Length: 299
Image 1 (cartoon, rainbow, N blue to C red):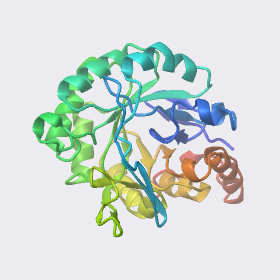
Image 2 (cartoon, one colour; image 1 turned 180 degrees about the horizontal axis):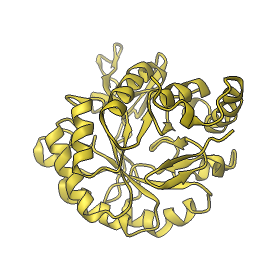
Image 3 (cartoon, helix red, strand yellow; image 1 turned 45 degrees about the vertical axis):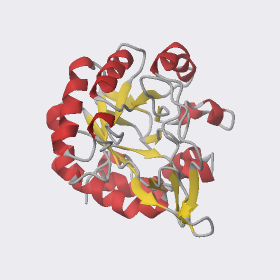
Image 4 (spheres, one colour; image 1 turned 120 degrees about the horizontal axis):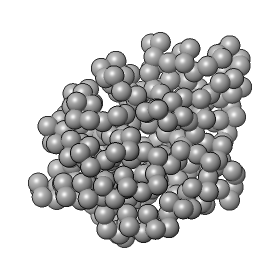
């Protein structure tokens, strides 16, 4: 069974990538299994300066899913370059650095630093709020996202993945705009904006009121968005959203995804990425699939 896939001329041994924000930098999970078996790891979301993250409740379970308001807690890009990259390079897998920012300057400066570092790919998270524009996320309007991607593209010589928010006004228009601005690949979807209320305290569960919803509950919507985007762009698409089984992986592949990222499922089962990989090989054998290329984008 050939599970290999190629994105932006970079070979992945299989399509399973650990999603940003759910896998740290891989060290904790490597104590449970050899994470070198994975196709890739997308690092915890990095920002130009270190962040402590949000106060109050950060994770909240929902039916078939999870809400989070972690707030991009991370050591900062400089610390990641000095220590984090060397630790991640111990794993024989593709190293993707995920980066966010709260201003155009943050994005450009951070992207240049990471582009000059020993990473394989840069994943640009445009779901971050633009503090200079009233807090509206960069990834909501296609013209704003295009401006960010174009600015980052000018300083980034590594393959550039742009991670799209499902909260965008039009996900297909957003994808096209990012492709036109220089994205080498797209990953989607990020979390859906959601809310939870504590009726006993008579207040929102999260200090920021709204939080990001992920997990199995969002899979059908994420699958639809990935399918729509794959039909509209000419760059590789990495599918994200509620993936927890080998069947989910095949569904996203049939929708057109070149690879997938496993996120929330890591919280309920820390071995899930390894389990999915094992199950995927067996499922492909049962379905008489010799290569994922045979079924990619057939829907």
